[in-house]
Amino acid sequence: MDDSLIKAGLAIGGAIGGAIIAGLANAYAARQRIREIEISYSHKLRDGYLENARKMAADVYIPISIAIGQLLKSYDQFRANIDFDNNQVPTGSRNSFLGQCRNYLLEIDRLFSRGADAYLTNELDSTLRKFNSFVNQSLNETAVSQKIILEAFAQIPFLGNFSTGKVERTIPHRTLTRFLPTVSTTLIPGISISYASETLSAPLHSREFEERFQTEAIEIKALIKEVILGSHRAT
Image (cartoon, rainbow, N blue to C red; front, side, top):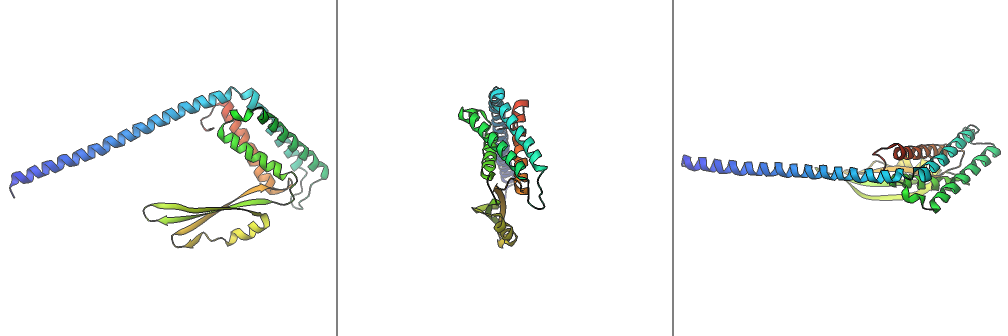
């Protein structure tokens, strides 16, 4: 083959390859720039959102924080009288905390009835509603009720894991503790399942109530502080 043809072919091939590489580089740079613009715009929206929320601190956020703080203080006093080992608590202590729970729920309902929830961040609104539901459902509970969530995943080579389905069931705690140890994390090769449980309600003097109550009450306090003091985590 003529050397000139070979050189011309190489030159053309190099030009095409260079154009492809340059095109890919430009496309990548363009995507990165678009991503940066999206992030910047998102931050501006979030800043404005949080600024509007802070304007309602005195009328919405601080009253909720006070109500949660009083409930936490009441629980600490109640907890000091719980005999977890024997699953017992003095009737007077239980009735006192029960009354504080009802007062708290009434106060939040009063705030929500005048539209206070419209000014809550999405995360705080969701967490607060779940917490209130848990407390309300637990007021007269005598046994732990939990929800189990099972999800199956298919493992496809080079593509990763894909969820093939999710099942949620509410079952008694005793059934749950017997059931979970029997769940295998692998059904067949390439298929695995994950499971998680959530306490829906529990007796006020139980460890299950203590765990969810303290975790979510502290989380609510933290979400309120993030709005009032300024943070980019609250959404």
